[in-house]
Image (cartoon, one colour):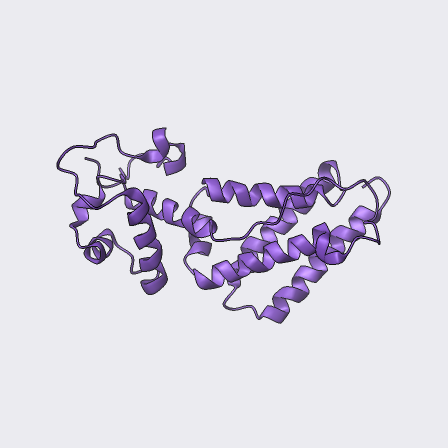
Length: 219
């Protein structure tokens, strides 16, 4: 049974391990009443209650009424469990409906703002900010781990669809995607230190810049 990451080796993401990192061992000695989903949910609740700095497998096990060693029947390392909890939290974020790429040029004036890509981007950004405020431990984990779980990939795909809908192409589209990603992980990561008004103003400036770029011929 592997209970800790080997400090002499490069760690592999739980999402890149065979079977998404689920240990192959499943013997009669495995504790009953536990499964990976229940453990991941308890991890999210413990991180919300006590924070990332105080999180430990021992504290988690105590909350579940099992021994710390019991958890390692379902995850190989604490890092794997934190990755699972991170993606579980990202799954709480409502994603905008799919949008087909808009034609090149300025956005159609007849399209209501709330229904256009800018309105959906605002909703996605504000939802992400709320998520980070509710789960302060998510921001540092997104910086520490590759963030490639299914919910993280769904979020990035939704963001890519919104950028596609701006009508930008090539390097401009890539730059817009990077700008929005950096904004969300930067300004959004400081959710507790940035007022809602300041966040909304910064988001308006970002969207206005993308709109201006999309309105330029050849963008």
